[in-house]
Image 1 (cartoon, one colour):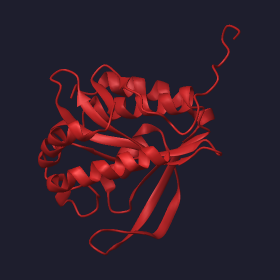
Image 2: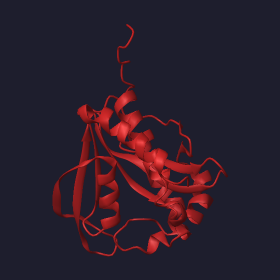
Image 3: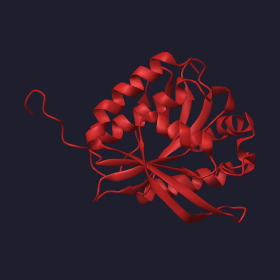
Image 4: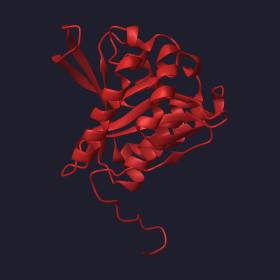
Length: 209
């Protein structure tokens, strides 16, 4: 490889990897994370928010088993989010809707304990996931999707530098039987260098989690 050349992308689908930043460590999700995730969900009653799909603590073993099955099938790769300063599990996120031929994927199924929201944690988490997606996996685009009524999530995605592609009407039936209108955002590979600088700038100015 010549100096300055981009390395060949890693093989697809995405394989388990540990991604570590200043404030957090992303670890491939496993049964050992169940207790920590239960605590994160209880911090803010995340499973009680009707516009999100966060498992109740009692449902975590089955939720983790399903995530591991998706990893084995090559359709998703879930992570536990560990805060570095105290080792506490504070949330989860994943690569999902993996499209190996198109080299596209979605970052989603993300939740954080209420006590670490509005800190640098989400910005760093997304910077690590986007960096691995574009720089290591050679993605051409990364999507983000959220409920029309999840205004906080929509604002957070826009602050990352993602652009709104559109709204999928009655896109998904939720566990309570309601139909979700899904707002779709994306970042494409040509935008990634500017988005990376933007995320580094934001992270440095947000409070530590």
